[in-house]
Amino acid sequence: MKFYVLAQPTFNAGEFLRFLADVGESWNRTPGTKSPQELVEVAGRLCYMSFGSRQSPKDNGTYVKNLISMGHESVLEHISWTFLVTGISRAFSHQLVRHRVGVAFSQLSQQYHDETAATAVEPVELAAFPQLREQWKHSLDAAKLVYCKLLEELDKEKNLLPLQRREQLRAIRSIARSVLPNSTETKIVFTANARAIRHILEVRGNIPGDSEMRLFSVNLFQQVVRDAPELFGDFYERALDDGLPILEKQRFDEQASTS
Ligand SMILES: Cc1cc2nc3c(=O)[nH]c(=O)nc-3n(C[C@H](O)[C@H](O)[C@H](O)COP(=O)(O)OP(=O)(O)OC[C@H]3O[C@@H](n4cnc5c(N)ncnc54)[C@H](O)[C@@H]3O)c2cc1C
Image 1 (cartoon, rainbow, N blue to C red):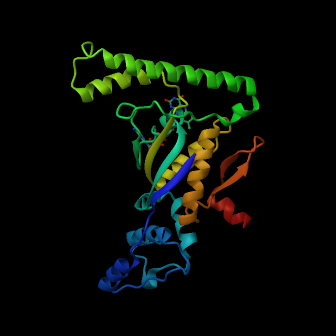
Image 2 (image 1 turned 90 degrees about the horizontal axis):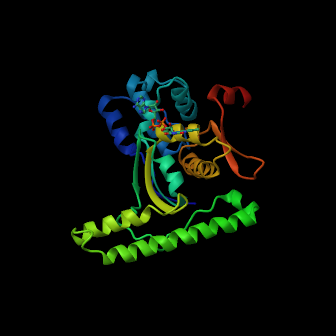
């Protein structure tokens, strides 16, 4: 599994300071704050115009954690990331695209793209079972063989599919792809805002029996926590007995009481 960060949130602080000057307000910024977290902070502060004398002494990290603790999470929707993720299985991507809110997906098509050269994503657990792994590989080879045969043979049956070439290809690939396994590798461009990412990490990051989802969640977490540490600071990684990471989540108030 590989993550490419195609876009990260940015905050045009100059424009915000221009707004503050227009309304005769000032803002006490927390030194060293990452810009995505500043954007979340100013979106929250704007709701109450808590600038100047009305600004509380909370630093940025405490402020954004407090927003989350009190459920004022729409402000997290102002920052989003776009990732290109490769080396994931179709089975996994089917789970991922079930998420509907605050996300957008663009996935490699098996209708427009010839999958003859497609690889498979091997479940990491199979490495411990060499014989089963061989059978698994064998079934992939068999499926690929039929896939290629269907493409080739159906392409000769133009009268059976009296369609324009583009639609013929779509039809042929649709038929052929039906034999491809769930493990077929796919690529997806995935955009999500911070609120949606927190939701995905929470419901998907902590499922011990789903190693591919765990790996995805941990990768996702590692990317976003770099840009917005406090926004995702209630999540943390730990290794399970299988050696793979899993995400845990603490409540911010628990975190505060232990640190
Ligand atoms: C452990 C686990 C097992 C699962 N097993 C299955 C399964 O066997 N079969 C299966 O089909 N799916 C299964 N799912 C998928 C699950 O049902 C969700 O479709 C998926 O996790 C997306 O979650 P979501 O709807 O919360 O996310 P999103 O679609 O991103 O929604 C985010 C949040 O917005 C709100 N929301 C979104 N849409 C609506 C709406 N229409 N009405 C009201 N509120 C809304 C909800 O609060 C929701 O949590 C499973 C998920 C998990 C984590």
